[in-house]
Structures are given as C-alpha cells and as structure tokens.
Image (tube, rainbow, N blue to C red; front, side, top):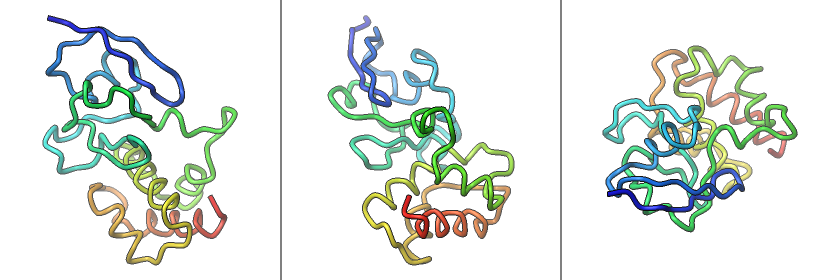
Length: 155
C-alpha cells in the first residue's frame, strides 16, 4: 500500500506516493528524477548515493524515504548557483577531480558538508570527510586538491 509523503529537496517541496519500504535513493531517482544521486553498491559502502539531509552527509541507499519527511534534502542538482556550477563543483572540474564522474556527486556533497562545518580543513580532515566515498578513477589526490582549493576560495 502506498502512502503520500512530502519531501523537501533542494528547497522545493515534492508530494509523492510511495511504498513505506522504499529508500530515499529510490524515491529521489525513480520518483522525483534526481538522477545525479547515483546507485552504487546498495549496501552503504561506496558513498555514490550520498546526499545531505539537514546538512549532514547521508547514504541515501540506507535511509527510508519516510525517515526524511520534514528534513532538508540536498542533492547534486541543487548545488548549481543560477545555473552555473558552484565554486566547489568548479574546483572539481578545474583540478581534474572528475574522471568518470560516478562518485563525483557524493564526493562533492561530502566535501560541502565538511566545508560548512570546517571552512579551513587540514588535508587529514579532508581525507577523513571523504573516506566513505569510493573512487576508482582518480586516486583521490586531485579530489583532495580540489577541496583544498575550494576551501581556500572560501566556498
């Protein structure tokens, strides 16, 4: 049986009818069309599905959509500023931190959460903040560099 819920995603409220067992990942991608949130492992180990819920990085494959009722949800689609990439997104592009792009949305959102809490993180703090996000392309050096540059730019 479906229930009607409201989710606030990227500042807008969406009403959607869902089964109570559906994850936030499923609802974001399949019901609301936020396909920037990637389905990776479905086990909470890769970080590809990371979104921000009330400002905190959350693995959306492990959270029921009903648990996000009343929360502020941010996806990668909500990061652009007036249609242009955010400074953090731009740093990822400019410093080669994006290769295949599959992990990028989760990495960027994890980095955003870090920079909100700690605008001047150390390299160790950056590595710790993205430790739940796996990348098979970049080797992390360029990702860490991009986050450092974004931090220095006061993102």
